[in-house]
Image 1 (cartoon, helix red, strand yellow):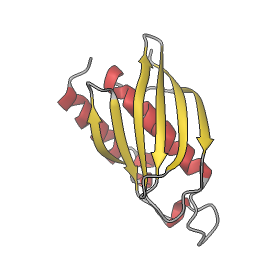
Image 2: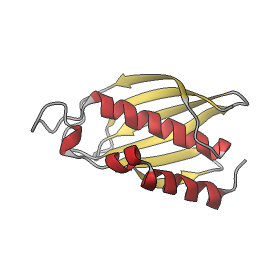
Image 3: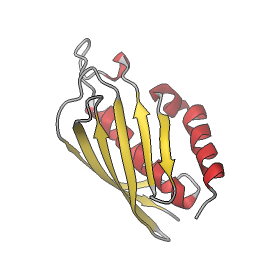
Image 4: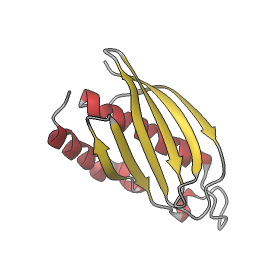
Length: 138
């Protein structure tokens, strides 16, 4: 298990300094090493729209956010960034004119492979999408 203050500082640093994460504006809301859970927030931007002035999030941005949440929750166990092997996403409803919150939890963090479940909610707490990521923990 990694040291909580160190890994949380690393997660905050990566979210603040990684160019893609910086562009997206991903924010760490909370992390619980004991429960192996992480909550991230992604504020709405017009850059994320499926069609101009629709207010509807593009599915690719939603998929990206789910993948980031899965990767970062596994950082709680591994202490390092890890690559995605596979990602499955179920889109439940459109996200329109809302920020998104990802709740991720570790299903398994093995020596070579890790799994995370991720749920994405709108500002009203309604489920937008869910996903399961498989990541290399080597």
